[in-house]
Amino acid sequence: MNKEIKTKILNKIKEYDKIFLFRHVRNDGDCVGATKGFKRILQLSFPEKKIYLIDDDNSQYLAFMGAEDEAVSEEEYKDGLGIVIDTASEKRISNKNYLLCKELIKIDHHIPIEDYGDIMWVEPDRSSACEMIADFYATFKSELTIDTVAATHIYTGMVTDSGRFKYEGVNGETMRNAAVMLDTGIDTEKLYAQLYLDDFGYLKFKARIYQRMEITENGVAYIFIDKAMQEEFGLSLEQASSCVNSLDSIRGAICWIAFIENGDEESSIRVRLRSRFVHINPIAEKYRGGGHACASGATVYGWEEAEKLLADADAHVKEYKETHEGWL
Ligand SMILES: [Mn+2]
Image (tube, rainbow, N blue to C red):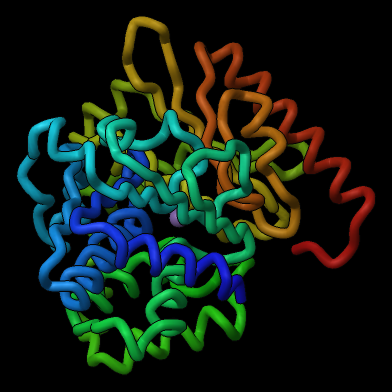
């Protein structure tokens, strides 16, 4: 699929001696795995090229994938090719030096909200950006080199962005690409342990989530996590946000939302929205956000606006339930 655009990208890569990889802010397994995996594939395939992944925005839980490259001067970027992966809009690109690159390529699987770059390869039906990188490798495997390390990075993003191959968007193509990665000899037992073991204290926090969770009339499960609760359990914003996944298996609750207080002066609240069957991104887009059909993010200011978003989500779910069958 999209062989023409992928060939264009490969030719651009061949054209440049210097390549910079970029990803989104508030990084996740997909954008980290995709940039690290692609960097390694390019480095193995073209040893004479300089491939950089420079980003000072790091996540503790992804530290097992290794550190980023040291910063280079702004001058260095100017004759380089920039490749931005997994990032729907320019304002979400983490390292702003992408602006300095001579040319820019966008590789993404989010619902397109904004065009940028000289070449765009966007496939919203892909379950992860890592799947696209795996596909890119598989398409040109006679010209590219991969190893277990690169494949493990890519597989990490495929696993995390698809909820361990569970979400909508996972199809035969996903599995065929995953198979190409697994064939390199990934230690999946170790990988899953690195990704999914929880600290004892975090499970205590989860217990509190289950105590405090609520549900709206039409089946939107939700939780408010204020600054005090984050401090009580010593949680990073990342850890606090991941609690949305604790609400993902309640029968009848086809949408679930976590509100996480940022604790800044503007009383901003980070909102994570998830759903099955019904698409939730229209609600996220109404509140300064976006993302995927069934996994979106938004920002609201103050608890009053949070209640408004919740009411909108409830009405959205009500309408869906009244007009559809077969949801659980
Ligand atoms: Mn992604």
